[in-house]
Length: 215
Ligand code: SF4
Image 1 (tube, rainbow, N blue to C red):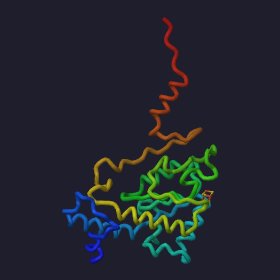
Image 2: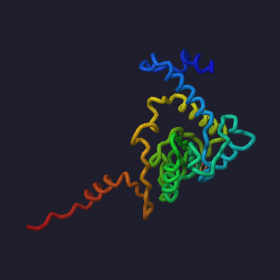
Image 3: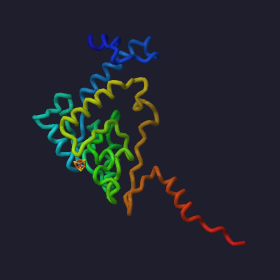
Image 4: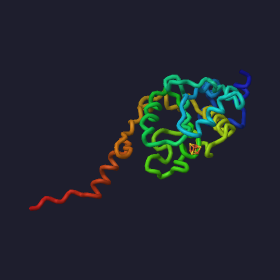
C-alpha cells in the first residue's frame, strides 16, 4: 500500500490539476488500475501465423504468467483482452466484431503484427481488410511479420501502462451510452459496414443520379 500513497508524488505519474485536492480518488485510481493491469485475461483466439508466436508467448519459455496474464479463456464473456493475431479476412470480420461485442467492459484490443494492424503483405487483397481498427477500437499495435514473443510482451507492458493512466472519473464503461454494441458487418459480395451505409448511399446516388422526370 505504501507504493500507492508514495505514488501521489511520483513525477512519472503526474496528477491532473483538478484531482490534486482529491487524494481519495487519486489513490483509489491507482489501486484500481494496479490490480486490473496485473490481472488481464486474454481470449483464446488466433487467426494466422502470428498466432503461433502468441502461443509461444503463453508457454513456459516466455511465460506471460509473469505479467498476470496466464488465464487465457476460451470464451469472450470471460475475457477482457482480444489479441488479433493474424490476417484479418473479410469473412472473419463479422465474427471478430461479434466476439468483441460479447466481451464485458473494461475490454482491450491488441493488433498483433502487420496484418492485423494494416493488412500486412496482403494489404489491398480482395479478401482481407487493411487493419482491424476499421471495425473495433485498438489499444496497442505491435509491428512485425510476425512480431516475436518479446515484442508481444512489450505490447502487454504498453497495455499495462495505458491501463495505469486511466481514471475512474473518466473511464467510459461507467457512463451511459458509451458501451453500445458495434453493428455487425455484413458479408455479401463484399464486406459492408452498417456504420458506412449513409456514405455508401450518397456515393451510389452521385454515381448514378436518377434522371429528372420528363415534363
Ligand atoms: S503479419 Fe506476417 S506472420 Fe503475422 S499473420 Fe500476417 S503474414 Fe502472418
